[in-house]
Length: 450
Image (cartoon, rainbow, N blue to C red; front, side, top):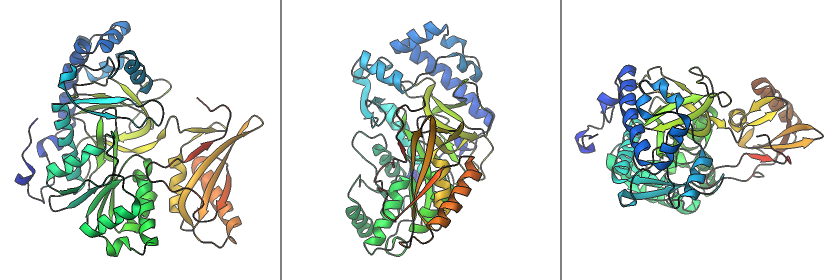
């Protein structure tokens, strides 16, 4: 796929690729099916593990005649990637190209196990960066911006996304994970107009600026903040809090190292995250039955690559719990939209039979003007029963209102989630501040729910 250079687009052009981004749902589905049929053939005939797994399941790429037929093919997950990487080091036998064709490797953080490598051919890499430029454009970034890329560059798949901003024409500052005071100095010196980081760090960096005597709204030029890595960017209360702190517009992005950087992101309408449907086919499935959920309902995100030749990912179970809509966006784009990540299967808590995610609590915490916005869920087991305690911080040092805070917040939590929890009010600054992904759950049980 070829695209006109950014210099050929006027800054007020609404789309990076108008014909693609505004095509009908029927056209999207026809394009997906054609790409998928070719991609399954590539995986079957070039990746030893896919051939073996398809044969074991009694399926063949020739049998894919509709998108529904994909459900006959086996799923994989992170454990599969690790096992195949260990079985055929260093990249694993899901790889479908010779090593001479691989030009770039990213790796997962290993936060839930051994890091897994994600290889790219030159074409894979170029198409990924073109998509990042398209996504930045949809969020309003332009060639006149000064963009500070404040994500980890060390093997992290989010690092090269900065090249999408450069392809778009923006002046790009490869800041990386600098100490907060140094990053604030750079933002101020170069008057950066846009940054990308995690929601937790955007909050922390804004608070740090204020402690350093810097008013983000007055002393800095940041007017767009792209966030990813945590659910917060799609939680209206969290997004509004960051926007109020910075006087900037916040856009949520979603990506995963096992495919490529950001795969979905908010346009300027900020009504869900537009998906890269010309690169990835999306399923949202009931985690227990593997049946598709109805549009708008929560289910597990399952992804299949359509173009990535180095390592195809066929029906990859991400563990992320999401919901989707296919209704057209008011921006005019017709790709499906994800209403953020509600949580992860491995972060889901089951308290007295009720499922609860950290993101459910975050919306309540960030909406309460008497709280700092920081929180932690602590789970322990008393006898044979699980007990949830939500730790929150009051905004002011005066603890005279703690009892009222406990009563009010506990009531809101019960009304919204159906869960009764102990509420512990802490002094401001008690909970740790995250400089990357915040850890919101402390599970003290001897045996955690599977």
